[in-house]
Length: 571
Image 1 (tube, rainbow, N blue to C red):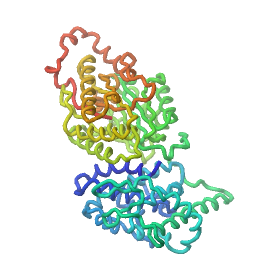
Image 2 (tube, helix red, strand yellow; image 1 turned 180 degrees about the vertical axis):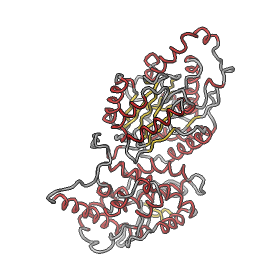
Image 3 (cartoon, rainbow, N blue to C red; image 1 turned 60 degrees about the vertical axis):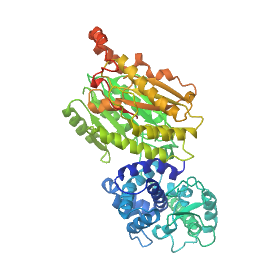
Image 4 (cartoon, rainbow, N blue to C red; image 1 turned 90 degrees about the horizontal axis):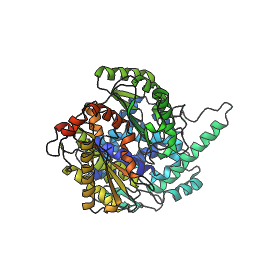
């Protein structure tokens, strides 16, 4: 996996969303970010700078300016953040205020993502091995921002052999920086004062001078490891990032495009499971989840829907704490937890229960975990943020992006259907139109579009409504040129919740449109296997005494109460 591509997919949409209020063209911002990725990659390949970054406290790592001052230095160790912001502003036609916001927002995200990808490996060594990913994306003015000491002393040491190797690797970068006005696919181009120009190959050019420097970094790193290996009492190269109780597969260091996640909710008694869903990059992550579920709730392995995706990390830092977290939740009615990487969010029908779960979990997990309540629901804000994030993610897809990448980007949006309606809002039509264009470049991709609702109103009514909404999305994609035979639809009613239906936030999360890839041999009908759904069983038990009343009072498309359904969230 090319690291520039990865950072463009994961970090760029987040930064663009964070700095949306700052002026400037999004394409210019994306190009500036890509050059920042290249600069960070080369600087953090320096063991001294990488060590200083690794020594930062969690609070310092969240401070963008602190991270920038640690990473972006000249050969004397003096911060060059102001120079960086000035150069980015000048080259890409952005205001200085915008580039300050952009670099400050991006710095912690870049470091976090690179640390996650490095896993238990030394960050510097990991980046030295991936030097070819970054070399083609450095602007000509980056020379003054290189790590301390790289241009002095023994700069020519080992340059011939190692530089030749590096030159071969860097001759065809995977994803060149696109210009501010249009995308450029020629890998032998770079930005100079806002213009796309060929990377100069002649003797004395900056890029050619950089190759021996990168070679020297790799040589120095390997020599450092060799010397440490010769010590009488060797010490580990770096402290593993992943929890000691979790075995990380060899591929885990570079496989993840997004954090592994788990969403879990108890039923109305607190003694059973209402919903459970997880996603990770490998089956190995799910072992602790299944063990915890079985140990605390005594359930079978198939109770939780656990999906493997190549676009998701195969590490899950919270896995070793799940038994304790589930024990806290057991007995708490209608409680839910959402875990993404090291962020744990609780919700419950009773506010005191939320406080108890948060306080209890903070004692269990390390200090670098974030444990908090599910945010209060602000539908307009959440919908707007999701639209912007999805739009940026789809726009950031490249010719090397996969169908998995497109599906993940599509599921970032929230389709905020009006009550009792299947009409797609205008702002979502733009996202679906972009997706249709991308699908044209992925002729083998086939998608399932599944509509989900909350548990308000009867199962049959919600079944019809969810089918209508899925069909509306299908029809719009077909109108934009996607062949009908590449799309399937399904209405799941409230059979597969991702959160409790006892809270407003949970109901909002459950109302959603979900895109999934159709794999060879997949049974599409299994998506809505209502008879085996724990949520359906609970709902049927609750409605049993009033079957006749519910049947005669069934709402119609024109008269359904406002609670019958509401905004649908893609996830």
